[in-house]
Length: 312
Image (tube, rainbow, N blue to C red; front, side):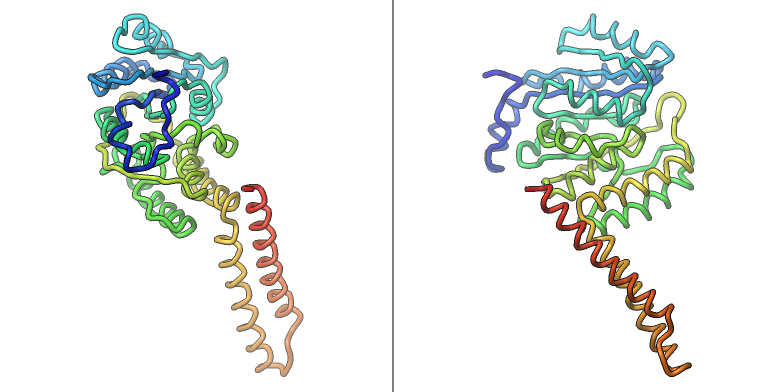
């Protein structure tokens, strides 16, 4: 068997027979994580101890200004349990850019991605891999919030997650988890929508959910990060919200356009009734609102036709 080209398209009932044959890449995007990178690498190796199939660890250093890449390369030179590769990006472009580099460079048919700051326990990885090949993506759903500014992050995440659940029609326990496992070939067609910034993991989840891929969630612990957080409260929260709307507009535009059209039309009808009762006739503003509602619906239908054509 060629370890990097094991067939993953078997029927779900074959999962138990195939799961130990998966060729695997563990992807660690890293930027200035010198305090955590070695312990995270060691934890990944321990978690996959006894894994019988070929696997590699791929560290993508996003132009760190500390010793992150150097420490990862030293670990790679000493590691005998698996292949460890380190890719040094020439300039810092963001967490999403590093992930895209890693997905393209990965040799495994399944890619497991986790942060290099020690927040996600690598011990969850074997549990996640049990669900392949039946699922296209498996996510670690965090059972706690250990990030900075939880008073801001929790309500913001809840509101945006509820919006994403409505727009996708799927219950999403954790929208922006950084612990993900997915079939590489299923992810490659959607890398073009992944932004270079922090909302990249949200985009990866939504791209699969809005394109009818099988997505699974498994509970995972979440720990306080090692080192300094790179979270920017206002900028990253706004990017998070815009990502949800952007991805749904890309793939399910009617979920946005039809409700907006319905609100405008209802307001236009109510305003027209009030105007007629007060003046005996409709006003120009009533016609403008009704026309805006109608045009919004037409734009949504046109966008849906374009999306359907692109999927052919």
